[in-house]
Every structure is written in structure tokens, then in C-alpha cells.
Image 1: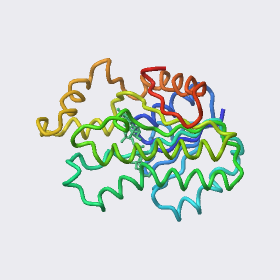
Image 2 (image 1 turned 90 degrees about the vertical axis):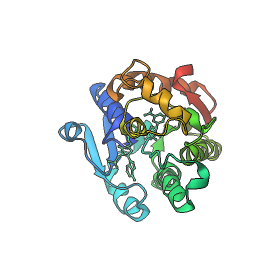
Image 3 (image 1 turned 120 degrees about the vertical axis):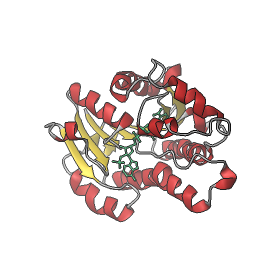
Image 4 (image 1 turned 30 degrees about the vertical axis):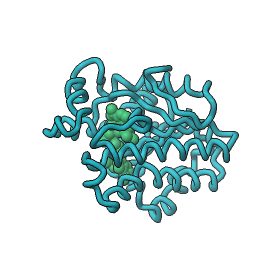
Amino acid sequence: MHILITGTSSGIGHGLAQEYLARGAKVWGISRRIADDLAGEANFHHLQLDVTNHKAVMEKLPAFLDECKRIDMLILNAGVLGPVKWMSEVNTEAMQKVMDVNVWSNKVLLDLLFSLGKDIRQVVGMSTKASLRSTPGWGPYAVSKAALNMLMNVYAKEHPDTHFIAFAPGLVDSEIQETIWNIKETDKYPAVERLQQARYTEDMPDSRAAAANLIRGMEKAREMESGAFADVREL
Ligand SMILES: NC(=O)c1ccc[n+]([C@@H]2O[C@H](COP(=O)([O-])OP(=O)(O)OC[C@H]3O[C@@H](n4cnc5c(N)ncnc54)[C@H](OP(=O)(O)O)[C@@H]3O)[C@@H](O)[C@H]2O)c1
């Protein structure tokens, strides 16, 4: 199995890389930081890259993936929460930064990989239930992930030989959850309290513990129509 994952330095992407490596897969990981434990793995190849730096992506990715002709699973996981504020308090510049990571970096990556002739079997865009039903404070994140869902849907129509899914991974303890943990304005942002309460319980496993179930869910999602939205909790 050849797996390409964006955002392997922490959280879900890190846990998935660990699990795939434990299963004997070859993993190509992209992130700005490097996870020390993955760096020594013979089957792990890492590219230190900011996915929003399109020039660097175009320059560095072809050589990085030279040996990888077939990609069994491309997991577009790199993402940011962005500002937790009411939409009216977020300027378009801050909004654009969230869109750059959560949406446009994935478009650039997909276009490049297809232009390089890679045989991509499955693409997973790491989405969230908040892309379907947001709550105050989650505006920038929710808008960006709703756009990601549609991006997967559009590419599914234009690339019928590749299976696309927008995938909600459920709650997983990660750096994003750490940010939410530190938010004090729970009255203004009702979802925060629920997420804070879930932390350190079985409702929010750490990324290593969650990985096997996420892989099961991503594989099961292949039975759905390409371009659909899937939630691991319903698979
Ligand atoms: N955790 C949850 O409960 C949850 C729920 C629903 C959806 N998700 C989604 O799951 C994905 C992973 O999030 P997480 O919770 O695991 O958070 P995380 O621990 O913050 O991981 C985010 C990853 O994305 C990478 N990344 C962010 N900006 C990047 C950039 N400009 N260039 C390259 N890599 C970048 C980070 O690497 P560097 O900082 O090293 O670049 C990191 O490896 C996100 O798309 C998130 O929206 C998470």
C-alpha cells in the first residue's frame, strides 16, 4: 500500500501514519514540522512543506514522489481551525488563511498529482460534521470544510477513475482540540463546553487509538458514491 498524507506531524495525520506503517504500508507525509518518531521509520518519507506555498509544492513534490507511481490512498488531512469567533468579527484576510489551508492547498495538490500522471485510487478530504451544521464561533472552519466537501464532489465528477470522499473523523484529541480546550468564552461558543467535556474520555480518543477505526471507516466509505460525505460514526 502506498499512502500519501498531508499533516503528519501531529494529531490525526500522525496517528494514521503510525497505523499504516505498523501495517507495512509505505507512507509519504507532508507537514511543516517533522514527527521525531516517524523520522526513523524506513517506510516513511517526509517532505517538510507549507502546503499553502504553492510554488514550493510545485517545485518539491514531483521529486519527492518520483518513486510513488500509484497512490492507494491520498489523505488530504492538513487543516486549521482558524479563529473561533463570530463570523462578523472575522475579517476576510483571516478567512482567506483558513481557506488556503483547508481548501485551496488541496486543489493545488490534486491538480499537480493528476498532471504528473499518478494513479490515485482513493482520495479522502478530512472534513467534519461542522461542515453540515455549524455552531456560533465555528464559522470560518465550517465554511472552509463545506467548501472542501464540494471540492471532493466536483473532483469526483471530473475524475471517475478515482474514488473521493469527504470524511468526518469524529472527535480525536489533537492540537486543534488543545486550542478548543483553552477557550474560556463557553457562553458565547456553546460547542466548546461539549468538546471540553469530551476530552480525556472515550468519546475523544487520541490519534493513535483512533487510527484503526478511521482506516476502517475510510475503506468502508468506498462503498458510497464517489464525492459523498461520510461520517466515521455512521459507517
Ligand atoms: N481532531 C478532531 O476532533 C477533528 C474533527 C473533525 C475534523 N478534523 C480535521 O482533521 C484534520 C487534522 O486535524 P487534527 O485535529 O489532527 O489537528 P492537528 O493536530 O492540529 O494537525 C494538523 C496537521 O495539519 C498540518 N498543517 C496545518 N497547516 C499546514 C500547512 N500550512 N502546511 C502543511 N501542513 C499543515 C499540521 O502540520 P504542521 O503544523 O507541522 O505543518 C498538522 O500535522 C484537520 O483537517 C481537521 O479539520 C479534526
